[in-house]
Length: 399
Ligand code: HEM
Picture 1 (cartoon, rainbow, N blue to C red):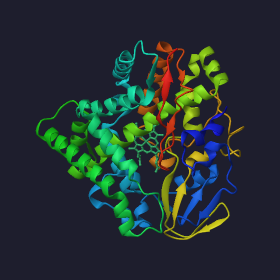
Picture 2: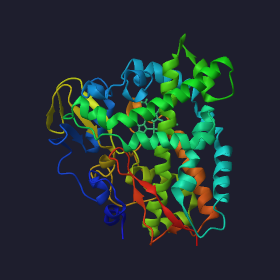
Picture 3: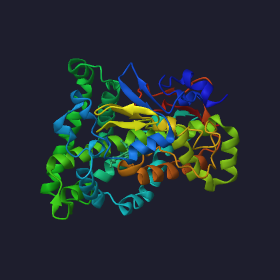
Picture 4: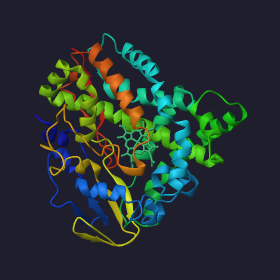
């Protein structure tokens, strides 16, 4: 049985039609229900993500009720040029490729420690025991906050995603506020927690990313206190939920495609390419929001100023005009210009870290538990939100 026939059983979100092996009827369409434009075509998605003049990343232009000014300053994801470039340069001066590469031995040790805890067991739950804790411990240690607080982070992040309203321009401010209520409480608690740590680093600098962010300076500019906290918040959030999904999704994809798993066993050097294929085939971050700043033509449709677009990179990654045999999972796919990490100026800043964690952890998992497989009596469960795609619970057997 293929993934396409099982995603309903696993509870994949109904909007993620590409996971069911279906193609969209047209590359761009207006969705009456939500009042948003859905962009499915690969070329059309690239066009939107690349043209920062015609398409703004600040979705509060179309959805003012989502604006939370105290949390938005320093949130790269919602910024446009030139402010975006200045901030990205500043944070990149602290979060460098070297900082990421130096984490490899620590990622290796944490993976081994987590797998030691399930040693000898016939079964375990891959997300709780490995895919969730690994990226959280890494990002917490990198920032310099206690990894032992990870249950707190999990509570906040669950609170945030469980209470996220689906994006729709029809909702009133009251409806959004009601839906976001406890999600916002979670953000507020995360904010206060990180603000306390950032203030402490100003007083007593340490060898950690929070201290580097507090001290970062480019062209005489420094991050404000709010920007440090909001960026750290973004890292803590983006730094774990998506990588957790990437790890679980790769295990699931290989399990569902035994021929591809066998190819990888024969040629272990294909692991990085298998990870890229998972990013394409079962993209953890399936869409990004943009707003048209002017009237534009896209995929044969006329899009009005201030209208909201959902750039569905998950669907674009299955576009047959760009990928041969797009609904096949191919661990050796080459080239694989997927949009799983986005494209253009907002291209995922954490991509090198996510790739490194996946390569190290999945390599160790393969070596230590070569017979790992999913449990036929206890199937996977998917995230229920439209914002994320992939496994939330993945029971596995070890022999
Ligand atoms: C941006 C996906 C892991 C930090 C993005 C975007 C995507 C993405 C699609 C672009 C959003 C847009 O264009 O609106 C993913 C996936 C990940 C992952 C699939 C794991 C498999 C990480 C990690 C970190 C991170 C580990 C940090 C430690 C960021 C940041 C941005 C971003 C800061 C904003 C960049 C900007 O706006 O300039 N990510 N991400 N991500 N990601 Fe990731």
